[in-house]
Length: 623
Image (cartoon, rainbow, N blue to C red; front, top):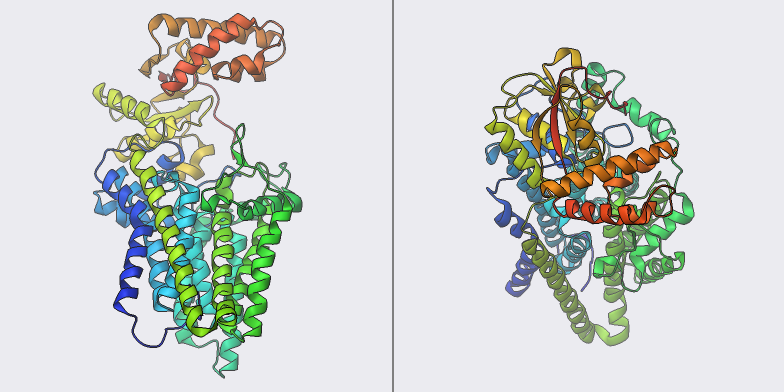
């Protein structure tokens, strides 16, 4: 098994090779097909970020003040650079009648396109020897990221398989194939606009590819700036980068680009968060090169309290150094410039990846750098493929080397099939709601519809307390899609659409949405409050006991000068979190913990409470 030169092989491939290629490609696509069969036409209520993404896809057409000009909103106070994800999902959603399940299925279709495109390009540029290792990298990456990447409608998830495709395109372009420059431009644009966490690795990879292409064109005596070479890529840049960014700056000054620049300079909401640093960045990268890495089914050390991966010993980086160093020396010794370029590309991507991981601000959540998994798999799988091809003839001679390459290829094919099978089985087994809050949101929407709410009245929907379950976003998404005049606070305009903001003075009602039992109890006792929807995870007596305990213990915490600890009262971990705090009786904490655990099993004690405009809690702070 080998990667070989990114150029068509001589002669037509055999029927057996074509059969294996189809089988491997279909295996890599099996998880995608499983999601399509499982979710096609199935009612779906997205929540949280998924709901916001679904709503913004719905806003694409017809053109209006709500048409997105930037990407998904980030917790750092800016939006991802561009709207290409929304624009690509809109027609796929339209095929499903504009339904929310169509947006989910469309995101899975896009991921399938990345896998199929990778297999097709690898096959066209080198037959089975190219297709097997590149498809293996896709399958290993998908298995490591898990079924959530396919099942959850989220911009970091959709982008994940496109990074592997970008590496292949960059190698082909850097080797002198000008026909793939347009594809490289489109995929690079999609990655960076969809999630800014890809920016530095993508920039490094594309810079390498273009630099190598320009050098190849000069060696061939051709003019680089000719229309046939740069015309279409330039048109893509203008249409998908300059036009949306210009309109955004004109319509919403100073524009998202200014927010991005300010954040990069350390200003904005994330300015106070520390940079991860070189040691932490190298440790995160080293995780992908342990003896049993995550992309081969190994464990990924995750801090259970913050949900962020932990670093591995930096010594594991000797693995990529050894693999790429050996591959590079062999390619140079055998005068295989094509394979030398692949090794060079992987080295550039690895260095850029280490720098990007070092620059992560705050908690290093895994979704910020999904590309790390693909990079680790690519370095090892493709690097060893180069070593196999170049070392086998020297060790065993041409005839026996061919058999060795076939044997190694067979092992990689088997591993690819196994990875795809594991992920497909996990997708099939995960047949329930996509996210825990989905059933609550669906029940609330059904109840509101049955009660005729909001009935055309202008409503300002506000979340009070913790918004992590995403209930408020689900209500805004589904009600706005149904044509109801629902609005959010100006601070949320960048996320939900700036034409969808309102103040209490301009609406008929405020709807306060709570996901926390402590907050819910407070909302139920507001003057003039009218309960529109309420979840009942406990019997009446248990629910009364829960609220009474939270009220009593919350009062004691505030009196003791610890109001920040009130949030623990809604957590099943309340007993361990507050044990030993003065005034917190162990028996009361244990009982509250048991009640909280029951609530958590049923998602939440949630509520939607209507109050007269201007009487609810103040709006959230901007950005």
